[in-house]
Image (cartoon, rainbow, N blue to C red; front, side, top):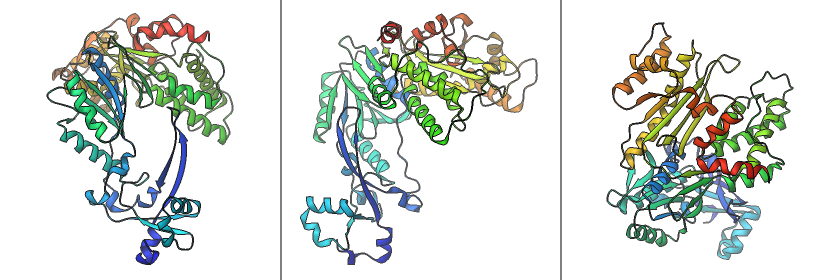
Length: 499
């Protein structure tokens, strides 16, 4: 359009643009034109636009279901130029304009010579008709568009996760994350219908072996599913220049008193970036690193040289075990939750919670948590109760997903402190508690009474959540890993470290 078609206000508010290129984990190189959405952030029209993202546990539960039911088809579909499929006017978005300048404007005119007549003083003004990448509303409008398309195919959005869609008749499932869809189908007919839908939109479909949410997914002929972060970690650790290996994710001295100096601002930025990068892997399949990462992340504000040394140790551990996989082949879909706590573990006398969720007793792990407790408690028994409360979001998500896939499993929570179990059933004990602790205790009691949770005792020597609440190494660590990462994990460790 001609610059004279716009008012001075519209010219001032025209959204700037930039282009960048990057190499994807798959090895592809791509370039993308992006709008500066920050210019729209404070406008009322864009305040309530939300785009949900998939919970990592949804992916784990979905794939575990596919393995358990021996679903014939597991695949992904990638929508090309997804946001550009959305017409802004269809969703009632206000008119917006963009201004291209410099080399970017010249590049556009080289591709579209007719645009040269609209160039003025090196600037090109265009109306934005599609949900271009970078705009505040683009992700929300695309999610709405894709949701509507799947619902037209008969799929129902699930309360457990707004990014999970399941067909009520043939039970095919679609787990979406932005423009990627991970799908599983019990039979050929439902798979063919779903693939035709994706092919209509020119999606790239990958069957049985693919990347999803940064995870390597492998669907074997016997319907066992293996998950790892190998591709993600190989790329990141290579960029970080990591050399060497370690047998365990941390040293026994991880929580020892720290007398070393603070890092420089540049090193602090590097420290925080690396911790957050590894946390991404830890929350998906590398549950074995969560305790170490939890402790390292506590120091992101003011990390020291000791913290950096501990981070380097973790990086070397990952360098030696980057091929480590979780083996999803559950024998049952019953939800088992293992919770453990360490009393007064940290210098401020707060404890630490460790929790992981499996399908079946000591079955494949589908979710884990390791975190410093949010309040100070007066005994180890109270610490265990608090750990149970802090694990409830993980437990509730697993229960909701079980219902979505048609299993309705009541989670069984394993706890190694008999006094804590008695306290949770009774809603109190012989001593007084703070009102903040009492609220948490009574919430747990209500869940037990409503049959939303069953609590069972498990001996301390058999509690595999130990590794997520304290600095375990040696045989105890190896034992925990067999449960936490699946039976295949132990077979990889020695061979990888010997590399």
